[in-house]
Length: 176
Image (tube, rainbow, N blue to C red; front, side, top):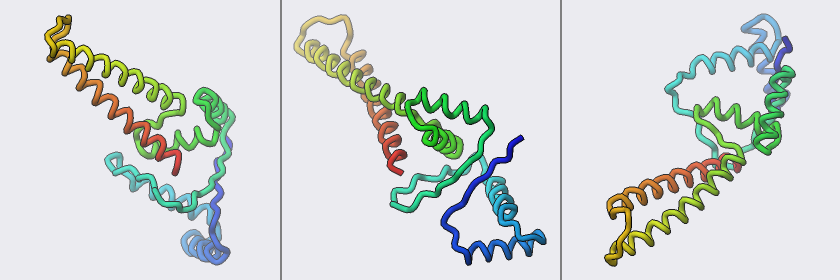
C-alpha cells in the first residue's frame, strides 16, 4: 500500500531544529515526521464524538497548504465526485474532510443551486397561498380551510428559513 504524506509549510528553520531536537529526545532519532505523526494521532485520540466541531474562522488568517498522495481508487473517487458536483478535485477533497470533521454534510454547488431554486418556487407557492387566504377572508369560497392554509404557510415559511441558513453557511464556508 502507498504511504500518504502531508507537507507542512510555514515552519522556520529554528522551529524545525527545535522539533528535531524534541524528536531526538523522545525517539532517539531526529525524525520530525514521526513526532508529528504521533502528535496528530494523539490529538485525534483525544477527540470524542460529542466534542463540539471546530468553527469556521471569520478572520483572514493564512490557510495551510497540504499535499496528499492518494491510492488510485481514492483519487478516482474524488475526481468523479468533483465532476458530478461541478467543482475542482481539491475543493471536493476539502469538502469531504470538512464534512468528516464537522460531522454534518457539506453541500455541493449543484445541491445549493437546487436548494436556491426550491426556495424561489416555495416563495411563489407561499404568495399564492396568501392570495387564496385573502379570498377566503373576503368571503369567497375555496376548498381549503383558513386553518389548513395557515399551517401550510407556516411549514413553507420555516422551510424557506432553514434553506436560507444552509445557503448562508455554504457561502461562509466558501469564503473561509
